[in-house]
Amino acid sequence: MATTLTSKGQVTIPKHIRDALRLSPGAAVEFRVNAAGELVIQPEKPAGPAESAPAATRDRFDAVRGRADVPWRTDALMALLRAGD
Image 1 (tube, helix red, strand yellow):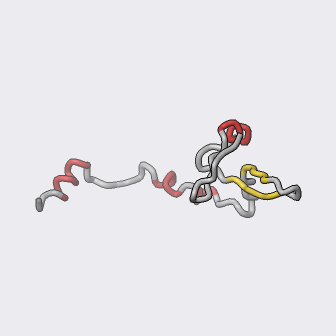
Image 2: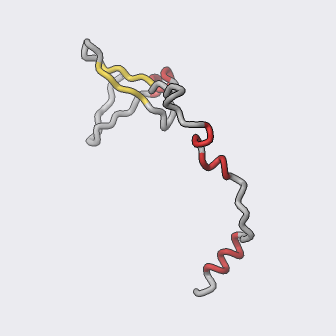
Image 3: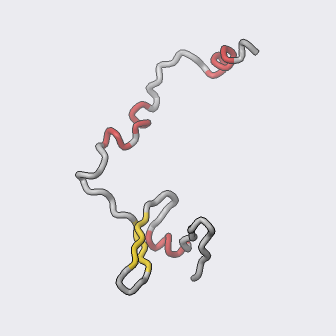
């Protein structure tokens, strides 16, 4: 299956190849050219234990989600913000 290179140097990876490599939107891939001059694409290998982020910093938002101690409700806050209008 052929695909066209865009002016930005982008190509679409055909669905059957994305499925075979188990690629989803946002997945990192590695490109290289082998000795025969062929392009090789593969999913990026996950970082080793020394390179991976600590569990506490993987998703900083999960650590604080649901912990806000704010007395304002949306209607009251919007009324305060619009009071000068």
